[in-house]
Length: 268
Image (cartoon, rainbow, N blue to C red; front, side, top):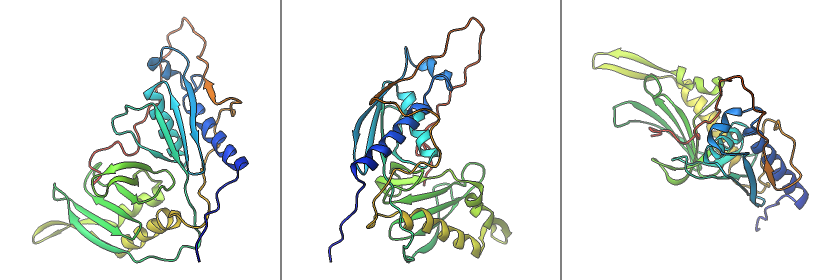
């Protein structure tokens, strides 16, 4: 029997678009983020170019603002297109599916060495991969790769899976502690990594939560934001954020421009 997807009605789609739009405006509001005045000659304008059940496209007149909007939306749980070079003024947001009844899928845990001879654990499944790097310092990222958008992910040209891979590498401590199950030990052959059985269990849990339960299914995808935006929903489709009042006192500017999730090197 053919499966028919149930998409949100017009009112729900409009509500989703308003929430995304308000969150974008809050991310670059010059009242709360005055540092953006260093990157623009005037107020920051945001336009909603496209809105549908699976995709919302916003455009701003400033690439730094676009980068901050992408970062803020992603931190709130949205899935976005990344901009590796921080060059575009367009922000594309994708709806995420949710399936609580997803059956377990067969996965395979393997171990490999990267170009620097660092150990990398890979838990591969039919819809994505959980990658745990076992390096020192910043080279121990826990990265989830998926074939579809999932919360707080960014779509990039992935070194492992090519264009269109959705990844996430920033995690709360409760999930980042997979790393604590991987320890370095000394053997007759030198230093090596010892992987506890619990590491695979935790990686499987992460795969289930972020890959299996978000793969496209019969349920309607939605634009889910974990945090409510600080700004009011504008009544028009173009917003102009008002600059803060000028003052004669020198105030240090704080610029909240964060590179996109996927804009890092060494993902593989």
